[in-house]
Length: 210
Image 1: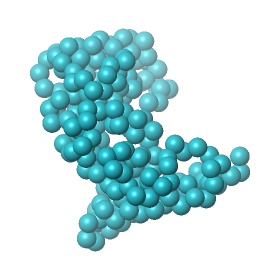
Image 2: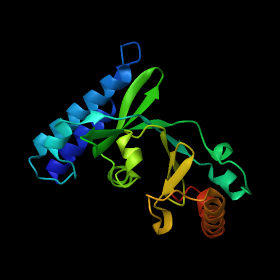
Image 3: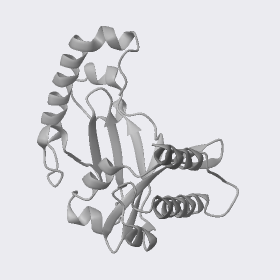
């Protein structure tokens, strides 16, 4: 347990990493530092913990396209009828960086920009690694260009928008098949209404965390 706390402490320290935006290619510098620190964690763990990341693959990996991460407004979803979903979506909160080695996604790191600084806010997200590896081959071969991630709070749905097409594993869907958004959004709204009816009061009191 003490060793686990030590490694978690290392990760907490890394999340405070910042790189001045006045430097050249500040995003790239943050990516390289995050990758370097992750390699150090894997090395120090000496296989004591399974982080699901291969050190040798990570060592040769490079950052692919930065993938914007956004949230869907749950209240607006409850009121949604039809039309484009852009009006339901928040501005970009952070960037998910796929680390790729020979077209294979090794892991992801998350980077936030705050007051002109880039911060590594998360190392290793197994959900993104698994799901982004299952997107259509052309998406992966393009190094995730024109991809954005939309998170739907409360429903724990993750949508991958790729140049106007949307992919999701929500309710057992295949990540290789683009969704008919007119049908999918109505299902998402129905699920949101059910959630609101069941947990709305608890949500007001701040007793649910997504």
